[in-house]
Image 1 (cartoon, rainbow, N blue to C red):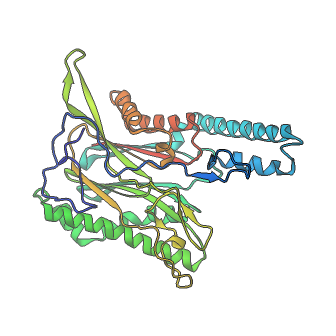
Image 2 (image 1 turned 90 degrees about the horizontal axis):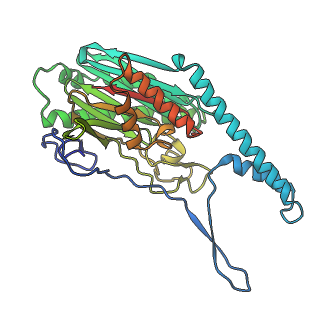
Length: 391
């Protein structure tokens, strides 16, 4: 597990003067992560008394659709009709998942890519799949030379349309490249000092807010609801910064300091680099049929308090969670949209990295593809994009 000074999170004002090196030997920790739980509704008992039943929200839209299709039948007079509808919906869903998996496996070469960033000795493998969706709202960007000693990898997961993700992917690199202070920091020879790190935090936050402002302005003008979650990895010399909003996130896989003498094998630790707050069931607008499963995103103007008409306060923020660490030889970062994380745990992703790290030739691309395939095998309904960085 990481020592507390190893990966630093300044979202809540931590002291950035701490050394960010070293691995501990204790157990694993996760910071500011809340598991989302299904909301339960109490059903009033019948007048004759009796226990209060509990029912849980059904999140599977296909089951809901099948149930709605079957509402023309009375469950008392024709229960078999509803059962048949549900079975047909389940079979159709299974066929859709199988088709998505087969399409990815048959055309994996065109759905994955390898990048070698020579100036920083970084290898990046990216893989993606549309999944069972009729559209692709995930967008990614790999910028080799933001500056000579600076590279960027980012994934944006759009919702209510792909426009916000496309816009963010197209503009994040120019936004950062045009920042003179960041350019000065990237070219300095000395290691980054705590004030420099604070400045980079501010630059990343300003870039997220600038993207958010532009997305809000366009979507309001054109009466759209587009939004996106985002995770951005900025590598600058020996430092790595990870910023995210929403449930697109990253993990760090690092060789641990301890070694198993019986097998002579190095062990690995995994650390979550992104904060995902999902302790609420949904963020819901009080006056409109708008809801969101995360509390941070780009865009989503109905939830940003932008309407002077209803004067609703902002329910969702575009301020990113930011963390940083000093990279070591052999560090691997896995960056992905929630299409992966909804089906694959941090530990499972780490194991896939470990299993593939000794494969010769573009192991990052193969690992990214293997993780996408794992999510599809486990029947994710979402778009999936995965980037694997060897630092």
